Length: 439
Image (tube, rainbow, N blue to C red; front, side):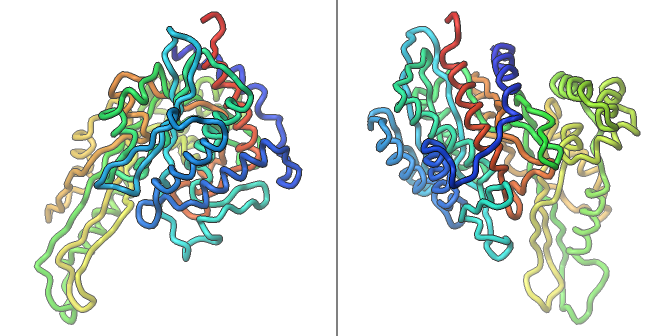
């Protein structure tokens, strides 16, 4: 199955790069309709603090009902403990009685965005200089909008796939402590989402930073995520008589050690094939470094070149980074406690406990700053489907810039051309998978 999926995707990628986007005011009706849907999704706040996935799921249900779907084909779901984190499942029936369904998966929740930190309102869609700006434009409301729009167009066209196409729009992928809709579906409503395979986020490609697409990727595996908490404690005292033994300083010392530490370079079959194929198609320094690191993962010069690229740096190893801080209890008191959350993206095959022990060795604080394990989750919701034997893949189609396009950060953006051409390509890809020749 994996090779067949890869082959179909590779054939379709060839025609993607040269397609040009059209200006907003000259969009044909079907793309204008898609853009309006994308806009509504971005402008519906679905963050864990101020938003509601349930509200967006309701809007999408109404949208699909207005575009040919029957109520019997749509299922809303949520749990009483998390009323704002609901989702939606849609089923587009196929004609085959032997082919198993395929599942399109998308999370509709987004990372929290503070208006005061952004150049523009994060929950308003702006189109400027070839980019869509707004929280969720790239992660991952573009793909979710493509899935919804695609099924609505299939219904309007009267398209009858051989394979039933399911769509699950879920909440909770961006948090590790709240309700996760994908996990809930796999554990409680497998009948709704049971499929031969899943198409999810994680694939796509990237540009050279100047608008030229240099790679399109098919996502077949992912790191796991481990969260750890470092905490320093101290008896404290009055701030008018400070001493060097300070919980915040102790925590800072530990974090500096973590900043300077690099996990060892690792390759597996997937990354080895990735760097081999991509490196063979490039003649620049980066391409030569890709081939060199495949030949010898300990080639420090090659690794140094690849490490200049943020994504390649992370692909080569486990990474850990401080993402949250807390500490102190009063402005006129020495801190009694200071803590930091350490978010790790763990290379496949490396154990959670192994990373924890490594971090303890790196910190090596004689004052015994403890490292406390926290909940570990998958990098995407695909991990929950893998756990029940349904493989998850991230198809090519959409693409971004080397800097990550602000996903999870400030001024998130998506390339306008990528959204429209990705929509076209993914439509063809899903049709190829839904109606395979000879089956």
